[in-house]
Length: 219
Length: 219
DNA sequence: ATTCAATACGAGCAAAAGCTCATATAAAAT
DNA sequence: ATTTTATATGAGCTTTTGCTCGTATTGAAT
Image (cartoon, chains in turn cyan, blue, yellow, red):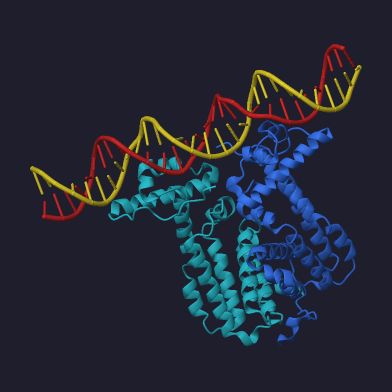
C-alpha cells in the first residue's frame, strides 16, 4: 500500500572527497543501466561497481529511487543545456525557422547518449512525477507557448494550449522513438526535415517549401 | 544477468471450469492494476482477489510476466477490434477521409478503458518485445503502408516508410497521452480534428479545409 | 596534539514476493 | 465401480534486495 519515499539526497556533500564519491556512484549507476539494464540496477551492485561501500551510497541517497532521480535529473539538465541559447538566437526569426531550430536541437539532444536516454525512458519504472521533472516540463511548455504567442497571427490553430500540447508531444516522441527505430533518418536529418514540415504546416495552415535537399526533387 | 522467462500460458485450460478460472484471474489482475497500481500487483494478491489459490494461478501462468502479457494481449485485442471493419469501410475514400476515420477510431479505442490503458503503458515495466506485440505492430504498419501506397500520388513525402513511422507514432502517442492530459479535447473531438489536419497536410503538402465545427469560425 | 565532524566501511537484518509441491477434490474415461 | 486425468488448494520455502548501524578512518579546527 505504502508508496515510494521522497527522493532527494539525504545529505549534501561538503568536501571535495564526498562530492567525488557522489559522482562515481551516479556514474556507476548510469553504466550499469546502460550495460545491463534495470534488472541489474541494485544498490549493492552500484556501490560495488563504483568502488565504494553500500554504506557510503546510503549516506548520500536515502533510497534507490533518489539515486535514480538524481541520475535522471543530471541527464535532463544536460539535455536542457543550450536551449536558452537556441531560443535567444531564434528570438525574432520567422516561425518556420524557430521550429526548425527547435526540432534540430531536440534531435541533437537525443544523439548525446542515446543508450542512457533509451533505458531511462523505456525500461526504468515510472517514479511518479518528480518535483524537478514537473518544473522542467513547465519551463518547456511556457517557452513554447511564449514563442507561439509572439507569432499568434501566423498560427491558425484556434486553441493555443492544444497546439502547444500537440507540437511538444509530437516532436518529443517521434524523435525519441527514432533513436532506436529510425536512427539513420535521425542522423541524416531526414526525420528532422519532415517533422519540421509537418509542424509548420500544422501551425500556419500553409505548406512549407522543402529545404534544399535530395528529397526536394521528389515532386 | 539472466533475463525474464518466456511468457506464454503453461497449460491451456481444457474444461469450462478452468477457462473460467483463467478469466477470473486475468480480470482480478486488471482490477488490481487499475485500482491500486503496479506496486500492488503481486501474484498472491491477484489470486486472493480472484478467489482462487495461488497454486491455481501458477497452473496456467508460468510466472508473473506471463499473466501480465496475457492481460495486455487481451486488452490490445479489444482495441484492434473494429479496425478491419473501419479499414474496409474506408477502402476507396479520399486520403483525408481515411486519415480522419483512423484518427477517430484511435480516439474511440482510447476511450474504452482509459484507466487500464494508462496503467498498462505508463506504470507497468517494459516486458521486452513480446511475440504478439511485434506481430500486432507489424499488422498495423502494413495496413497503414498499404493505404499510403494505394494513394501514393497524393503523398508528397518521398520516403513512405518514414511517413508511416511519423504518422503512426504521432497519432498513437498524441492521443494516448491526451487520455490523461487532455481528456476534454479528446472527448470533444478537438484533438482528433487538429491531428487529422496535421497528418493530412503533412502527407499531401496541402492544407485541409477545416471541418464544420465551432472552432472553424476562429479565422 | 587533541577534539570533533565528515566520510567511509560492510556484515547482516528484515521484509517482500515469486513460486513449489504434496495433497485433495471434481470430472471424464474405462 | 474404478482408474485416470484435470483442476484446485495453500503453507511455507527460497531468494532477492533494499537498507541499517556499529565501527573505523580521514581531515579540519583549535
